[in-house]
Image 1 (spheres, helix red, strand yellow):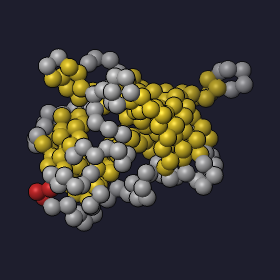
Image 2 (tube, helix red, strand yellow):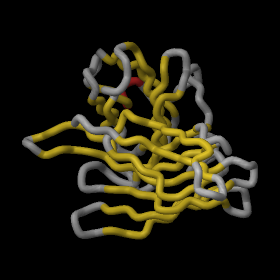
Image 3 (cartoon, one colour):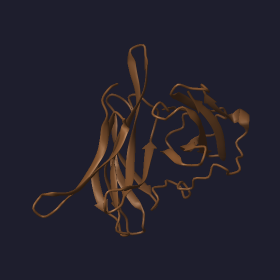
Image 4 (cartoon, rainbow, N blue to C red):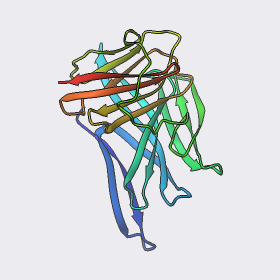
Length: 232
């Protein structure tokens, strides 16, 4: 897949002249913000979608489309960017068409979610000020004590050229959040899962990252697990 899209935000003066222009992303094939609204702290919140292409199976292209929100400074610089998924991949598509601040300091996202060729629903998600479905999603701690047994969380293939499967062996458990971190603890990717996502396996693509060792931090209904993954 040779093309790429970026998130693009601009500020204009009263005469329509561009004051500044900022681009974000560039490692995905489809990405758009559809709304941007001011926050009480002087920053902005933007909402839209991101489509991540994964791989071909028997000439069928598999992808995952997330609803996304991004917090921006008044100058258009990115403070944080989060992705949300409602169900498994391919025919499923999530989009946030509008995101607005709420009176309690949180964020309300309104969009659509489609889980088949013909079935589409209105999608309404309430988040806290950090974009969390549950408190604490903003925490980035690669040294945190974990309590998911080694045998209950599998990350494969390892090493990988890009595609990674993250699987919960305990069928009574489910994903709440997956983060990809550098060894130094820098957050590279952040996905949150709606309660409707009860599939025990998640596939993502590390192809955009440089070869090296990364951390996969998984938060589930039963605890936290951290695994190392080698990207070739």
